[in-house]
Length: 103
Image (cartoon, rainbow, N blue to C red):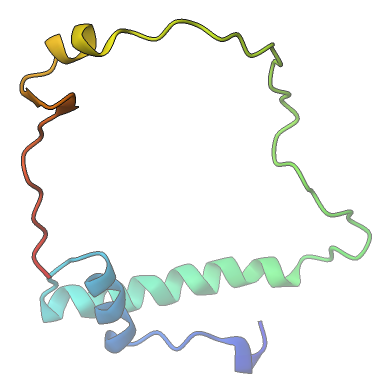
C-alpha cells in the first residue's frame, strides 16, 4: 500500500465505524480500537509484499459445485392452514409486533 492509499486510523475513524455499528464507545475503548486497527492494517499490509505476478485470478473461492435439480412445481400450503399456525393473523396476513429503531 502506498502512502497515498494508507488509511488514517484515528479516533474520528473509530467513532465513525462505531456509529455505523451503533456502538457507544468510551474514550478508552476508542483509543484501544485505534491501536488495534493500526495493528491489523499493518499485519494485512504484509500481503502487499507477496509477488502475485504469475498467479491467475481466482474467480471462484470454492471448487464445490452445486447439485442441480429440476424445479418441480408443488402445491402450496393453503392460506387458512398456514395462518392457523400464526400467533395472530388479520385479512390473510400474519400480524407481527411493530419494530421501531431509534436513530
